[in-house]
Length: 261
Length: 311
Image (tube, rainbow over all chains, first blue to last red; front, top):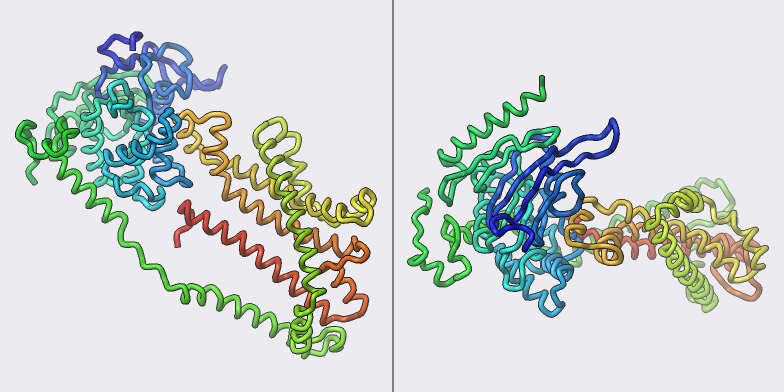
């Protein structure tokens, strides 16, 4: 907690990442600098090849940057994917209990903690189900509960937690996605999470983010940041969201068209 | 639809009953709950009622019964065609009473007991060795390069080709039979495990990494369970090879004074007793099918539990 000042939860300074080496090396991220405040909801937006997923992998410490530094100040970091990636051989509660075990929660507390997490994603009655018995949206909520299991402290607070979400609702239908926007917003608020949310859906980014960070493609650079001033709750189909989304979309298209030339 | 944007937390009745949602966002939490619950219920749909046991049994059994009937008919047709004399190739009508007499003798059951004992011991040893080798080879890349193709090669090698060596090494003994049974089955078991480990879905490996699964824990909680279906397939194939090797062994390695299915089969041939011979062959076939069905049931249960096939 001491390394990062209290007004910054995640600090990326000049982060670059290259894959491969020599002439065939591919620069995925180029000197990306970004500060995320505690409790902030930041959406990373970009076209294909902007290195969004690479960036999250780096913040999650699954990979090392080629240059630059990433400071999460000892915060607990969890990563959610587009796929729920639940273990099919475990029940819903079994999946959560395994995550809690890896967190070092004692065996006798795990069942109750898992039940509490399931309640918080409104799936209290589904503990004994297997992942394949749930719908896509429900599985993604279990995956969210698992990410929370990996990060919440013993009081259930997410104050020093960073939740990284890699297009988590990209595979869901619009109706489910809309409800899950409300749901993630609610959990973010009540737990005081810090969220880095990757998406290629501009409206989704504006609907959810305190700030939208636009990335360029090949290599990924920060092109522009858009604060989102609208009051919450927002509706994805509201005029304000649409207006800002249109502005960002124009900027994004401009960025994309540079690659066609 | 009027969206609730004017929330006053101090007077919101929902916050009094659910304090953790006091700082909740936009939509009234109770309404979001209802919407989520409604969508969940719609998406899960109504589960079809399970069919009655009798109906399920009938739908499983009648195709088998029909297949047996067709096989018997084909056999009878060959006999009717007069291609072979009836004492060389007796028909079902002559053979089935002999079969019935056979399965009521103590000698027959002694033979089955000895053969099954060999099969179980041989298969158990093969499983132990196969799993150990498979675990090592899948774990260490250099072992994979060294032994990967050798294991596949062993799997394709007809086990009967091992018998001359086995007899030289162990003479006509139980060990010779066991040796070949183990060599026949172990490569399949090892290959099943290796394939299972190789095809652990990368997305699950990523999720495991995020959870901090490493080393032994990674194997215990992720790779082992993920490779289970492929492992069961390997066991099933291993059993088939073990059973074939055992039958070849019992025909070739006849140990004095023992009664096994192979011995009975060899004796029936020496006495030109085709009806007996066919009876024993039917028994060998039936044992093979029954055990294969057991593996199939284990495989099916696993798949249903995982949701790999839903019918």
